[in-house]
Image 1 (cartoon, rainbow, N blue to C red):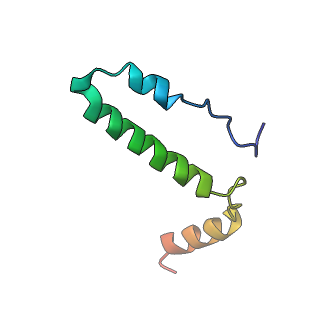
Image 2: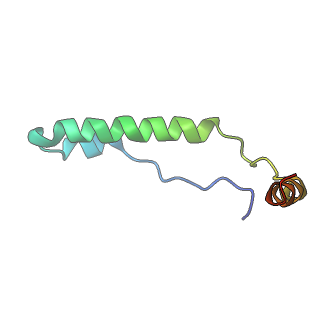
Length: 68
């Protein structure tokens, strides 16, 4: 399953909102706002992450240890 975006369960926000007591409405709205922001961030990321060039890091870290 590597390389595949994780399937997210859809939240029925309307049904959820109906069950939220009035004194907890602000917390619910904050949760929905944060959920929407995280979802937007995840959607903006590429499906496959950038490949890390480990040889570059290996060379540069080794040089920095020796003052080079």
